[in-house]
Image (tube, rainbow over all chains, first blue to last red; front, side):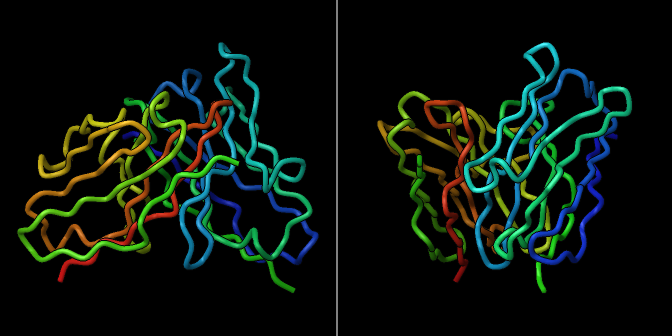
Length: 120
Length: 107
């Protein structure tokens, strides 16, 4: 079964750090670009960042609101993708989804999401 | 920064047609994708590359493109289609962006 499973969410104080994990299974992970998308309470979807497959350079890109604070990384040996979040702000609160374009162009596979709450 | 503009809401009676637009300057050069998002659930891809439909998505969902606007059309709307719908595309640098979302209400 093709699957993405996020973990690592929780409550953190402003200025703190958190690392989200996403475990992938059921598809050729090495061949995939992996992304993180978030949704703040009552708000829309927001693209956070992505990491390319090694054959495309393996580099990561991040959206402007998180650039310099968040880092997407991957471990192809364990089929894991990570989102390291530093200097967290209240406005980073939301559900974070791991997603990828596995079979089609477009994000056709999504995890169930993990909740991050930044509050004092 | 690049923006995709959607109407905040669309209301439609059961059996009628809902049309959701998404406008962006780069849309003539970049494909658009559409997602259905229900509360508490992960998004579902309903249209990719402007007008292609993934397997398992009902034929009543269709997409089209004209200039700087793409449109998601839901024909014969059903109660289960009530959800938020988001368009997604890329800016000139290849960074992804989502539209603000459109809430579809079935009257």
